[in-house]
Every structure is written in structure tokens, then in C-alpha cells.
Amino acid sequence: MLRIHRTFAVVGCVTIFGALAAPSHAKDRSPKALAEALRANDANARWRAARDLRDLEDGSAEAIPQLIDALEDSDPDVAGMAAEALAAAGPESPKVVSALTDALQKRAWEVRWSAAVALRRMGPHAKNAEKALRTAANGDKDADVREEARRALIRLSGPVKKIRVR
Image (cartoon, rainbow, N blue to C red; front, side, top):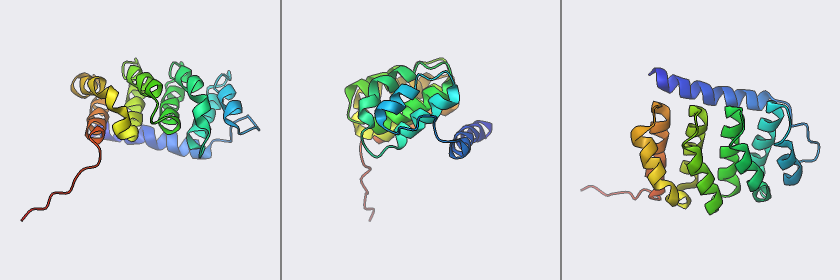
């Protein structure tokens, strides 16, 4: 029960603080300007840039290389938001799947969890991550990461078919 509360507390805090956070410092909201803001000295500015790239309706695909670099950010919150942004920016990109698969091996549980969430959101497009997700589902030291990896594996199989019982 404590583990579940921790996950919701982290997600809730990120959501609440994300909603309350001021817009990123970049006045230019183009993907190019936001990608540049991922290199800011301030972790909050980097997090907001990743969030804004995640929330773009279209065009964030050009920021994929910078978002992949942001998975290595020293702040796990920034790296986690970069994972979310990658899932939104390039759900069909093999480079994105590969980067998120690598992120399942990171030291910080928040980054591993965010990578599993992102791969789950990508659904069948993340099929190449199946082996890494199985490893995480069966052996990650964090229960929340294991659970999210299991959810991602279920989603990889595509839409669930309804079975009629007579």
C-alpha cells in the first residue's frame, strides 16, 4: 500500500507543480526554442521545456535528439518528463523506443518508472522493448517500476479483445 501511495504522490506532485509552474523562460514556443531550453542551467526550466514539448500538438518530433539527451539529465524529474515527451513526440520512432529501453536501466527509479510509462503509452509501437520490459517486470528492485513494466507488456499486445461468455 505504501508503494502505491508513493507512486501517486510522485505523479500527483509532478502534476500539481507542473500545473502551478510558470511557463518556461523561452518566449518562443517553437520546438526549436524549447529544445534549446532543455540545455538551461536551471532544472525547473529544463523540466518545463520538456513538459511543453510533451504538450505540443505537433512538431515536437524535431526535438527528439535533445529529448533523448535529456534522458541523461542529472535531475530525475527532468529525465522523467523527457521520457514522457519522447512518447508523445515519436511513438513510431525506433530511436525513441531504443532510448526509452535504455532508460529502463537508469539508476533513479523515477526515470525507470517514467520510461516504462512512456513505453506503455506507445503501445504496440514499443514492441522492440519487450525483452527489457520483461526484465524490468520480473527483476527491477522497485515494485512500482515492476508494475508499470507489466502494464506496458500488456499494452504491447494491442487492444484487448472482448470475449463473449455464454
